[in-house]
Amino acid sequence: MNRLLVRKPMSKLLAEASESEGAHTLHRVLGPWSLTALGIGAIIGAGIFVLTGEAAYRHAGPAVTLSFVAAGLACVFAALCYAEFASLIPIAGSAYTYGYATLGELFAWIIGWDLVLEYALAASTVSAGWTGYFVSLLSNFGISVPASISTPMYVIDPQGQWVNTGSLNLVAVSIVLVLSVVLALGIKESATTNTVIVFIKTGIVLLFIFTGVWYINTDNWTPYIPPNTGEFGAYGWSGILRGAALVFFAYIGFDAVSTAAQETKNPKRDLPIGILTSLVVCTALYIAVSAILTGLVKYTELGVPHPISVGIQATPFPWLGPFVDLGAVMGLASVMLVMLLGQSRIFYAMSRDGLLPPIFSRIHPRFRTPFVPQLVIGAVVSIPAALFPITALGHMVNIGTLLAFVIVCASVIVLRVRQPDLPRPFKVPGYPVVPALGVLCSFALMLFLPLETWERLFIWLALGMAIYFLWGRRHSKVGALADVTMKTPGD
Image (cartoon, rainbow, N blue to C red):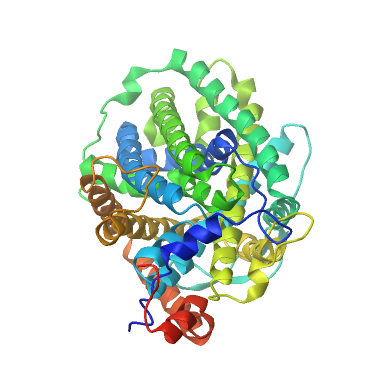
């Protein structure tokens, strides 16, 4: 058991963080604004363009604003913990690396495998949603593009039954592969592309806010909290909490900023700025958009895949619809960009530690990116994007992210107890209350997810444990060092 719980020494982590640049290291080019743009690029997407209407229609009514506040509060606690770790351990790997330093190798593997649910499946989920908006955008200009081709295609639906979808989503495959190539060509080019996209989609979100606010019908906000129908999660206070568990997907992405630590010029200062600023900006936009949307359109009419477009139709400016579609296309594309970036950096960190084959940490001598895992991940992500509908893909993403948040918040407390004297450029305020609340809030949201989601999580983790014991444990560099020294140095 000691071998399974061996921790990666802080001295080794800090040495990796201070590596000088070379042909085989990641390129440090990102500043605070690029990191903030990465965060906003990852956060604003499917949540604001799709899930706002779904949560209002099915669970919370106009009180969906409170659902966003509840989910945002849990994310603030987690973001503060991520910021402390990102400034203390500024290397690629995010929650995986933090867990390795505090809880041990087995927990680090569980987190790393769990993050595949967040980054890879989130990219697949968003690519499926991107298809609809892209096809809709082109239709505004008289261009007809088939989103999929008809073919016998059997997949397992959310109830575990084999069904014939009869289609292959080639548009989703195409966008995933294109963005993977962009990321493989260089982090600076990728960050520039993302920053341009962020400005466009944020501008369109602001356009919706400042256009719609003048045409709100306050009668649509009555009742603000619709009475519960007798079913848990169908309106009332339980609906607000179930809505929070759903719209939590809208916040996924701010933690991806920490995966770019080894490509940041001054990570100890800039990472906390990027993480917290992007979360605050997006939370404000979410609350404003959800309030205006439910004021423009009765919540009972928002059970559609494009609620923002429906909201625009309720104003005297329906011609703004194509611009909303453009914002959705841009927004969802930037989410995929950052999710694919984050997944490759997680694999890069795990490979450097020996838990994955060395090919996943190979750096391109010219582009200075982990080009092999980037392209492999793009190919793998494109498979579920092609086969599964967005609803089937999205179920697993939230629980994977919330589990990572629970572990990161708990790890802050563990490291403060074990190594209280470590220099921490950024410290979580209100310790230990804030990280403890982060654990409780994130776990509480997990409890509001459906039972079948928990079942799939356990199956996924079981598969990950098999891979760990067949490969990772045998090739672990930290574990091999522990076998030689019989202790973990640096603690």
